[in-house]
Length: 425
Ligand code: ADP
Ligand code: ASP
Ligand code: MG
Image (cartoon, rainbow, N blue to C red; front, side, top):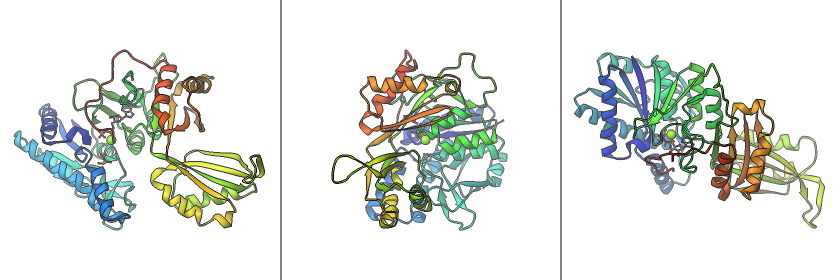
């Protein structure tokens, strides 16, 4: 029997927590499992290291940033191995590179290409508990150390579970599983006992950071069952897996997600001519920037207050981290494309309702929008997929919008969802 257990940063925030996690791991080992542990950096270490880098250099080279950030996971991995050793079990820590996590060369956002877990298998055969530093690997081409993106220790864990043929992958965090909304915002959020890969993918893609998006993609592709639970309790958690049979009483909405990581750019006064939108989004794509929602409105005459039918305003959302780059590349094309200005706004948030039930039920959109209207919340942008409706609202209205949608779709539960640790950063 083989299991991969991943512990997030808030579960190993200090020495005491590392010892507590070590006991949990040893208990699994003593039940007869081969245990591979994927560990995150302690607490908010990754944020703190990033802040530190920016104090030293406003624009650090991505290679050096990865050298810096991977150190966070290396620290917690070594400390955890020490704590397990003191409990009378052999444990060995490995960096991602040593563990055979081979990636692309894209620093800060590398993809796992392959895992060659020779050293892990040998250590397991020796009876050791294996500790792997999460969210990192080594580029197959440059041989440099890479990171896989924020929150990507989840992805390391699922990828290792697949490569090692583990029975399943356990993700230990600071809440009791996947809830119908972020328990930090909705106290009445309800634990979801089982959720399909499909819905979990949509939740993760819509900002529910309980699981890294690529972890869910990987799990679905490799058919790895993921058990999300708290490292602070023994509650049953959530199983993310292939749900062959939908529950009899399919809820209309299975969850509400939010995302504060995006910004909105409005390209103002774009000539209303064929090819202009293509030129804008070609420019953005050439800079490797992912666009999420797009809206086109009629422009206003800069001299009067009336509409100007010869020009349009094109707005789109993108990751805040790409904002500066987008302004730069678009700015360089201002005369070429012929627009009059760029407006940047990062005081926005996206709120999404998700559920496979909406496929067969009309009226979900109306109910969602009515709930927002009743709460006095103005909708800025809208987008939909088959099983999701998303809106952009002002940053100050995100919490209220999530709560309003959660109540409107009857998701509120009796007991309060517990948040055991973490700063929510
Ligand atoms: P870790 O450090 O363990 O990886 P994260 O902070 O990345 O933890 O993810 C756990 C957090 O995800 C929770 O503390 C919670 O605030 C947030 N979260 C967002 N949406 C949800 C949801 N639908 N269910 C549970 N937690 C959620
Ligand atoms: N330490 C990394 C981060 O904070 C990776 C992770 O925790 O999953 O993003
Ligand atoms: Mg996480």
